[in-house]
Image (tube, rainbow, N blue to C red; front, side, top):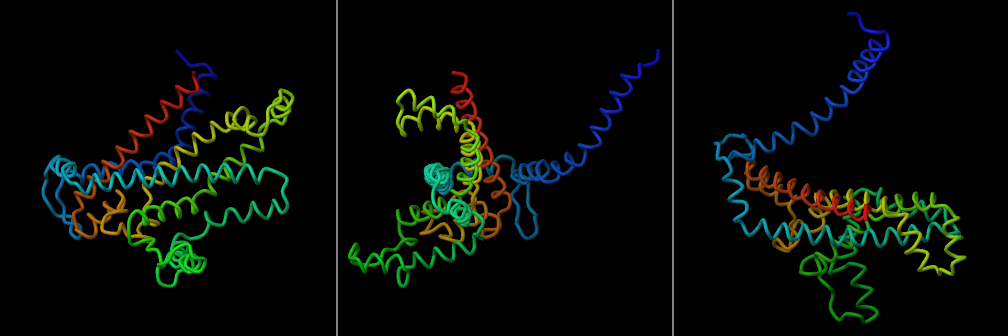
Amino acid sequence: MGHSPQTLLERRYARLGLLLIAPTIIVFCAVVVYPLLAAIYLSLFQLYTPTLEGSFVGISNYRELLARGEFWISLRNTLVWTTGTLSLQIVLGVGMALMLHQNIVFRSLARSLILFPYFVSTVVAVLVWRWLFNDLYGILNHLLVSVGIVDMPVDYLGSMPNAMISLILVGAWKYFPFVVIAVLARLQTIPDALYEAARIDGAGPIARFFDVTLPQLRDVLVVIVLLRAIWDFKEFDLIFLLTGGGPVTSTQTLPLLVYKEAFALNQMGMAAAYAVVMMAIMLLFMIIYVRRTRAADES
């Protein structure tokens, strides 16, 4: 029994669709699926990094990992860093976006300059901030001592909690323009009729923000928090270059611990186990966050 021309055409389109999407699937498998499976596989071995030679140990790496105090310290540091810098990014980003949305003088120039921290090289940004934070010749200490706020130079990067606070501030400064871009784009699409209706009802600026602006920003903020939480959780270069995880391990996060195990201690199997656990933690938090967000939207 022959097929109708419409059925043949649909099958031809289906084959064409598979052909067109095949390169994307191949690239996805090469850069995501294969490295993920390879990391899980390596985590089951005790491997020497330079030669990748070793023996199968099963889940022993995971048992040893969970028994180490260094893992829990690094996890705590990662959560403190992620929560702190993400919160500041959201507050600064939304506030700056609201300001740039107004008809202010040199608004176009301000919108261009606000993107500077996000586009500047991380290495350059860290070098500048290390100079600013320097306890001997840093300009911040010079200004604080000059105006009499402090008697002695402050050790920003060599003591706690100064090191973590400095790290969070630099991270927020570096990445908050991403929030500005996304929020500002959403603000420009909010209908003016909503604000007019709120004004007629007697709502002031604060009430309009919470009753009109914030609900309209909810969807984009969900995406921003999701993306920035993932990116901040796995942040390596900024932390490594600014504090190196110090003093001692006070600012050592999980990505730095993975690097340390793989290339300082030459334990690739243990490093892979840390990486897999780190991925599982991120996945768990993202699932919880998405479910709570959906529940809030439905209610």
